[in-house]
Image 1 (tube, rainbow, N blue to C red):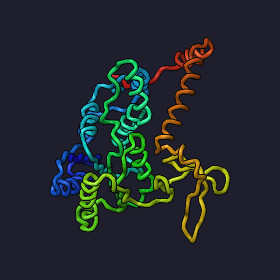
Image 2: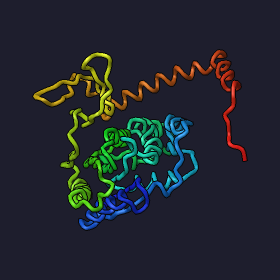
Image 3: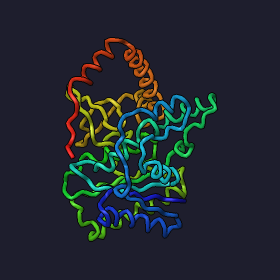
Image 4: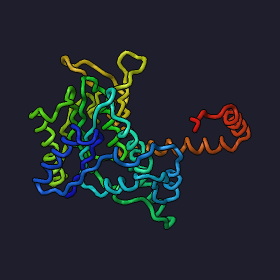
Length: 313
């Protein structure tokens, strides 16, 4: 088994150290390991060109056209059997380097529903189709997030959303507040070590692998973050998108939703295909709108109105 450790922290800092602690434990249990620091790679942000989507609908491999180190990193991730991700917490959430990778890795080009549709098209067209490694089921992933204060309430949602699109199976999810000196805290170091142990166990017995992180409030995806609508109790889970009610049950907050909604959850195959159909219908409407003279004229007016300022040499 091969376990890939990814650290989004500063070089030789706490995140690197704790990621290596998890990898050390995995190696001692017989795993092959690899360690990558995205901050040392050339990773550009997604620019929304939708080239990957155009390839998907043609049954072609939706590789990103941006010229940087992403294809190499994408290959290393696809080659791993399990992934452990360590990152610092910036302003309650994930750092920019994580978000860049999330936009490149957790978009249409890696969405299970889009990839399955692409493969079906490729079988009819004879095109090369997607990388089948990215279509594997339940790749285990663990997230450890290290904060320097108690401003840590958003980051777990970022991690869950990162895993949702490729349908990775989250094993561990740990948020450490007030832990800038985590290397000197034996109990927390032991928890990071256990992340490596749990990853190996998940790979040894995939059928029994289960979520070991914070149970959260949403019973479907374990999220604690919700978007509140104008009604008193109606809420939308920020991760899986289920709509339900927040209630107080025996002094604890619970989230309850109609059972039939689960088929529309964003972290289920049925929910992903529902989303795919919605996107397809919307894109067809937009394509027709773009053919109209009024749309072209309006876009031209905005284009010609003002140009962006740029630094001078």
